Image 1: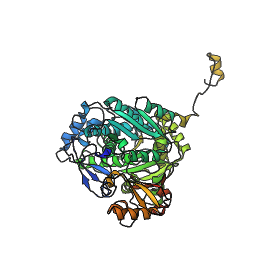
Image 2: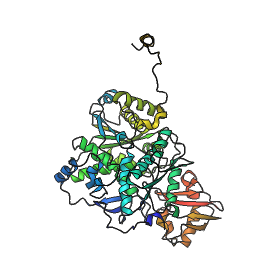
Image 3: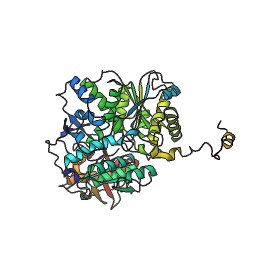
Image 4: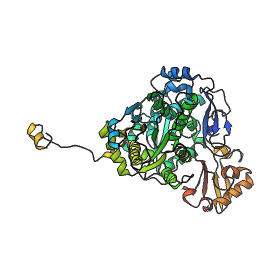
Amino acid sequence: MAAQTVASTTDSTVDLGPAAALSCRECGHRVPLGPVFACEECFGPLEIAYDFSAYDTEELRKRIEAGPANIWRYAPLLPVPADVAEKPNINPGWTKLVKADNLARELGVTGGLYVKDDSGNPTHSFKDRVVAQALEAARAFGFTTLSCSSTGNLAGAVGAAAARAGFRSCVFIPHDLEQGKVVMAAVYGGELVGIEGNYDDVNRFCSELIGDPAGEGWGFVNVNLRPYYAEGSKTLAYEVCEQLGWQLPDQIVIPIASGSQLTKVDKGLQELIKLGLVEDKPYKIFGAQAEGCSPVSVAYKGGHDVVRPQKPNTIAKSLAIGNPADGPYVLDIARRTGGAVEDVTDEQVVDAIKLLARTEGIFAETAGGVTVGVTKKLIENGLLDPTRTTVVFNTGDGLKTLDAVAGTGLTATIRPNLESFREAGLV
Amino acid sequence: MSVTVRIPTILRTYTGGQAEVSAEGGTLAEVISDLEKNHTGIAARVLDDQGKLRRFVNVYVNDDDVRFEQGLETATPDGAGVSIIPAVAGG
């Protein structure tokens, strides 16, 4: 039988904390918690449905604030067992929310500009958040091999988490990824397989492998464990609000690859509102893509509800998903909140990486260049209000995509004496 | 035209657990129609009420995503492999 049935899909006794069931986002069909990801009725995405009914707002707030300085402080709101912090995991999160006053001055933002810098996670990207969730689900369902389709960052996060938890890992990436990401994925000792094709080809391969006996017993973090995995992105929303003093930001700019992160950030914000942990007020969510892979941005600007797939061609390879699974939901959220989806050229991505580094000392990978570049463009176009509190996500470390700024280098090469220093015009 | 259709796990209740089945048809629409004859109920899972591919279903003829081709009118040459895959993976 296939991997989806290795663990019981009818076992509602599995301990994943407040997670009560899986519910289809499209048609509402509910199934018990299990390693399944698509609705058997309509193919829609299955999401975690929670039971938060027992929580008292102030007690929950105190419990969170007394929790560990990582995502497990939010364990009461996640599909994980209550003792999750005691299990071997990579314990990501509680990354810095940097008040970016220098960047704000450059961009003309007066309402407060913050960078949520997720390069501070254990493998230097936001993917540690989602993998940490998937690892707990894999453990609960009895898997011993972790796998994924990846544009690079996820491969590293899976490799590291598997190493820490004593799982086998075997991950799949496009064969032509940036060298930094390949090394960062391989160093943890798991198997790393290059696929001759782009990310969408890799994703298709993994989706087929999961239904084949060859994939039996494998927990694919972003396929059969995707409902659990995706919840990890909610922690970005929780952290931003807690770090702002339990307040919603007015505007958030989020990169779009599959669209899962943006979708779950919105889910996290809605949960905080419903739980009374933040005051209910309007917020706007903006999506950011690179022009060379902009299926959601094109659909948004065209007024479409359907995202037409593209063949990616951009230096922002961590966002190079031409057929984004959650694209339609991103469109819904951007429109519902009064945000927008915008894209920037590769040249603008590089300029934005340098701008963020120069103004705030934060070296972002290309995805961070996309969000900063799009923020600048949204302000110039009048779509983002510079007088409102704005949070921009940097989801990865620039050391992973050094090629993007390869032209940056030595100011001068001099002999080791003062005369040479003066001759170089550096005084 | 005879093709091989790869069935995703969530549709195997319609194929008696088989991961691959044979079907006839010169286009994807004809292949799905033939599948429905032998595995009643499967077409309604893949197509919406308007008879279009559901938005969370990806279908490939050999290595080509039919959304880049002619959708349901994509040709299915004799011996082709057709894969039906949930779209909600990845990222």
